[in-house]
Image 1 (spheres, rainbow, N blue to C red):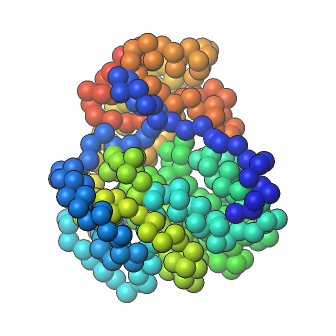
Image 2 (image 1 turned 90 degrees about the horizontal axis):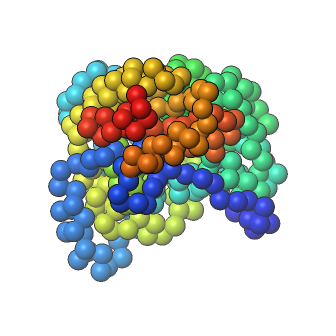
Length: 354
C-alpha cells in the first residue's frame, strides 16, 4: 500500500442496513444458510482458544473440492454432489477474511505506485478505491466493453462476474479470450466471482494468468463471518501465499467455511429459488421500472419520472430498505433490489406499490 495515497482516498457507500426491524433488500446476501451452520460455529469456540493452523488445510481442501464440483456441474448440467476431476491444473487456494480482503491482497502483490489498472464501471466501488490505495490509477471502462479493451500497458485488469450492480454474466468464450490477451500482455486478470455461486457457470480459477476472488458472504448468507479465498494456478500463487497475513482467517470462520463449502445441494436449491423468484420479480417490477437483465441475486431498476429518493423513502416507510444505486459510477436514476424468498419478495413488491 502507498502511504501517500491513503490521505487522498475516501470510503465508499455500500448496501446493508443495521436496523433489525427493517427487511433489507439493499444487500445481496442469501436469507438462509446451510443446515448445521450454527452448531459448527459454536463447536469451534473451544478450538478458538488456540491459534489456527496458518496453512488452513481443511478449509483449502474444501474450497478446492467446491471449485471442482462447480466445474463438473457446469460441464455436465448435473445436480449431483459427486466430484469429477479432469486433467486441468489445480488452483492454489489462499484463505482470506472475505472476498474484499482477497482483492486487496491481490492488488498489493501486483500493483505499484504509478501503475494503471482496468476497472469496469458501473461496478463494485471498492475496486477503484483499492487501486488508488496502492498509488495506482484506475482506468475506467464501461462494463460492457471491458473484455474488448487492449490490456497492454496496464498492470492489472478487473472483471466482476456477474457484474455488480448490473447483474449479467460475461460470455465464457470472450472472457477466456480476454484472459489469453492479458497473459500475452503480462497483465494480471483479477476476476471477482462473489456472485458466481448463484449461476450455473464455473470459476476461472484454473486458467493461467487469472486470479479469482471468492466470497462465502453471499451464497451462504454470512456477511458478518468474513470468509473467502483467492484461487489461481498462476505463478502469482507463491507471492499471494507469501504475502497473506498469518492467521488471516479465524477458527470459527474456517470451520463454518469448510462446512458450508461441502453443502452443494444447498447451493443448487438456492440457484433454483433465485432463478424462479428473480424472473417473477422482474415481470412484476417491469410494470413500473426498467428492469435490467440479471443472472445474479439482485435486479437493477431504472426509476422513471419520479426521484430515487422518493422510491427509497416509500420503501422505508413500509419497513423495506433498498439500495440507492446512484453511488455507483455512471448511474444517476437507479435503485438495486436483492432477490429473497417469496414472502419477502412480496413485501418488496407491496412497498414499491407494484
